[in-house]
Amino acid sequence: MVQLIGGIFAFIAALGVAYNVAAAWLVLRAVAEVVDSPDRTDEPCLGVTILKPLYGDEPLLATKLASFFSQDYAGPIQLIFGVCDADDLALEAVYAAQHRFPHVDCAIVINAARHGSNNKLSNLINMAQQIKHPLVIVADSDVEAPRNAVAVMAVALADPRTGIASMLHVGRGDAGFWSILAAMDISYRFMPSVIFGTKLKLAYPVLGPMMGLRRDTLDQLGGFEAFANVLADDFELGAAVRALGLNVAVCNTYVIHGCSERSRAELVRHELRWTRTIYNIDPAGFTGSVITHVLPNALIAACAMGFGAVALGLIFAALAARVAVKMAMDRASNSTSGPIFLLPLRDILSYAVYLMTFFVRTVDWRGARFAVNGDGTIFPKRPT
Image 1 (cartoon, helix red, strand yellow):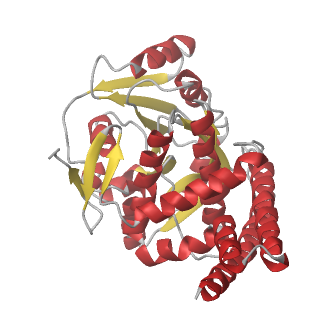
Image 2 (cartoon, one colour):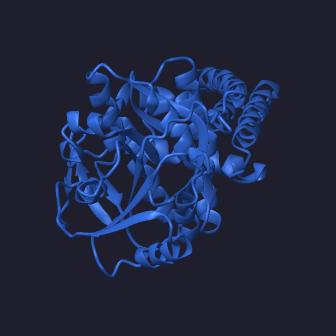
C-alpha cells in the first residue's frame, strides 16, 4: 500500500516536472511579446479614468500611488481615490501625491455608504459617480505600475472586440520575510499558471490587481452594482463580458503587486481567501492543480518509496524545474520576488494552503470574516 501511494505521488510529481518546464518555456517565449512602449502613432488618445479604492496605510503606498500620477500616456488621465472614512490613513499619501503632481486631474471620494458585501466594490460604486472618461481602469491600492501601463491597456481596449483587459503581475515583499514569501507565491506559482493557461488558450482570466474596460461596456453590465455581493469580482466581470460576446485580454506587461503580510497567520489568511475564491470558481480545476505543487509531491513520493536513486532523482528534477520557473519569471518581469533558497519553503507552504482550502468555508478580508456561498456570493459572518 505504501509503495502504491509512493507510485501515485511519483507519477503526479513527474507530471508536475513536465508542467513546470513547459510553464518556464512559455514564460520565456512571452518575453518577446512584452510591450515596452506602444507606438505613438497607434496609441489611442481616449481619456482614461483610474479608480483606486483605498483602505488604510500600507508599506510604500506613496510610491505605488506616484506610479499612477506619472503615467506616460498621450490622452487625458483622471485619478479617483476612494475611502470610506475621512480619517483613513491612506489619505495622507494621496494628499502628498497631489502636492507633488499638481497638474494631474485628481479627485477624492470619501463615502461611507455600503452597497452589498464586497467592500472593494462598494467603494467603487461610490467612486463611479465621478468618472469623466470613456476608458475606466481599476487598480488595487497595492499595485505599482510601470510608466507605460495605461498606454498598454488603452491599446488593448481600443480593439472593439475586447470587452475587458488586465495586466500580468509579480509580487514584491514590502514588509519583511512573510511578505517576501507571499510575493514568491504570486510570481513563481500563480503567475506561471496564468501564462501557461492563456498561451495554450486553456483559460481567459481577468486579473484583479489592474483591469480596465470601456465605460459603455461597464454600463451594459449594470455598473459595479451588479457585482456588489460576489467574492471573485474580477472573474465575474470577465464572465459577464464574455456573455456580451466580447473578448478578454491579458496584456503582456507586468505591474508590481506589493505584499504587506507581516506574520505567518496573516499570510495564510490572505492566501486562503485567494485559493478559496479559485476553488469556488472551478473546484475540479483547483483540485487538478495538485500537479503544480511538484516539490511537495516528490517529497511525499520519496518518503513512501524510500530515498533511493529514483526518488532522489525525482526531487532533483522537481527542484530544477522550480528554479527554471523562477529564472524565467525574473527575466520576463525584470525583477525578483525572492531568493532561490526560499523556494522549497515557499512550495511546502503553498501545498499546505492548497490542502487547507478544502476545509475552509469562510474567508478573511481586511480583518472581517465572510461566509462564501456556492454561487460565489459572500455575506458577513457574525461571531458566534
